[in-house]
Every structure is written in structure tokens, then in C-alpha cells.
Image 1 (tube, helix red, strand yellow):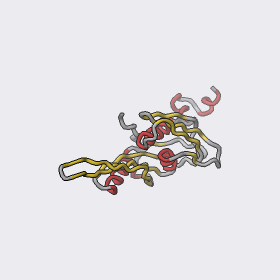
Image 2 (cartoon, one colour):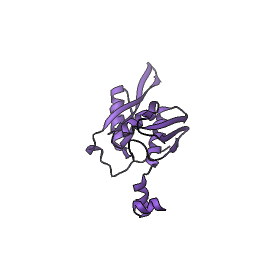
Image 3 (cartoon, helix red, strand yellow):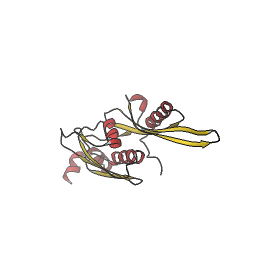
Image 4 (cartoon, one colour):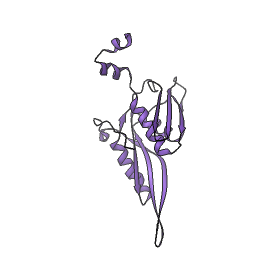
Amino acid sequence: MSKISANKNIRPGELNLKEKLVHINRTAKVVKGGKRFGFNAIVVVGDKEGHVGYGLGKANEVQDAIAKGVEDGKKNVIKVPIIKGTIPHQVIAKYGSAKVLMKPATPGTGLIAGGAVRAVLEMAGVHDVLTKSLGSSNPHNVVKAAIKGLQSMSDAMDVAERRSKSLKEVFES
């Protein structure tokens, strides 16, 4: 599976990005003298104001893997449409065998999400949303499905822009 493409017009250096570690996996390579351990880390970065990205880092030490994941995450930042602290519409996104359902919620509901999806939505700055993770619970694929779902969202302004109409014309049709 290919990496989800990020928006090229977002400059991560200009954003105040924070990072959140989602999962660390230890790998082992059997060699003549025993086992060599390595680590891979999936990290979510975001500014909690509508920008989020994820990255995967691999190294022989945990800290190096996390640092590489953060650098990779900064290269893959996307813009998320947030309306009154929630998402604009319901979406179901699939990546591999992981499926994520996200529904907008009324203010005060909170972030009803678990594990990897919660990390992605927190870093994006979503406060009220209902989610359900279906299928595989592999954190790598769940994060990618959540990002894919957020990337596929569009608010009324995006729709109006795509149709070359005003916001009022979109709501009347």
C-alpha cells in the first residue's frame, strides 16, 4: 500500500506541531551471536488547530525511532476541516483491513475514540466526535485509515470552491 499523499502547500516549519507516540514495535533479527533488536514507532503530529500528520520511524534505539517518526510525520501534514469543534460529516475510511467510522457530535459530547484514532483526532484539534474502529486493530493501519478519512472530508466552502459557486448558491441547490 502506498503512503497517503499530503497537501504540498502546508509548511510544517510554520506550524507549532506537537507529537504523540501511538505505538512502538520491537523487532528481532536472529544473527550468529544471538538476536539483534530494532524498533519501529508510529507517531502522530499536529497543532490541534486543524493540521495533522503521521510518520513511521525505524531504528536500533527507541528514541531514534521516535525522532525519525516525528520527522516523517512533519512531511505528511494535512489540513482537516473542523466546524465548531467537530467534523463536517460522517465518514467511513478503510486502509488495509482496518476500517474507521467517524461521526460528527454535538458540542460537549467529547472525543469518543480509542487508541490510535483518539491520538489522530486529538492532534487534529477535534473536540466532539463519535468513532468506531472496525476490522483490524493494527495501530499502523488504524492511524492511516483515520488520516485517510479526515483527508477525504470537505466542508461547504470546499464544495462551493470546487463547483465555482458562492456558498449561498451551494445551499440553495
